[in-house]
Length: 92
View 1 (spheres, rainbow, N blue to C red):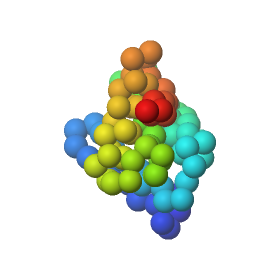
View 2: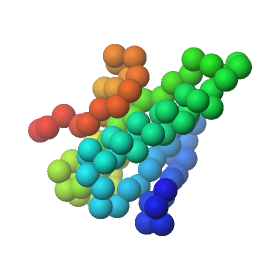
View 3: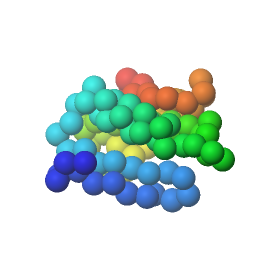
View 4: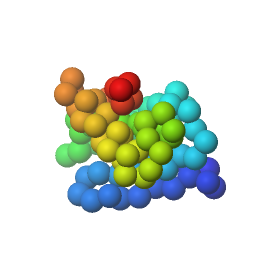
């Protein structure tokens, strides 16, 4: 993470990264690197575990923390449907 970035545990197995001044494409790159690192770390009993990622970008997907969280959450659930991965919010 950069100095301006922050990571939070939202609850259970959900986490959020706040990446100020980051484009959707750059956020997707971060999600890809996190996914690769997690896959490499998942060995033994944890082998085969995966993660799904959703991204929301201000102001395109919302201008309040609540709206951005809802958009990222919806994108994450969309990514889960095909078996995991990464998704951007759907354009309204």
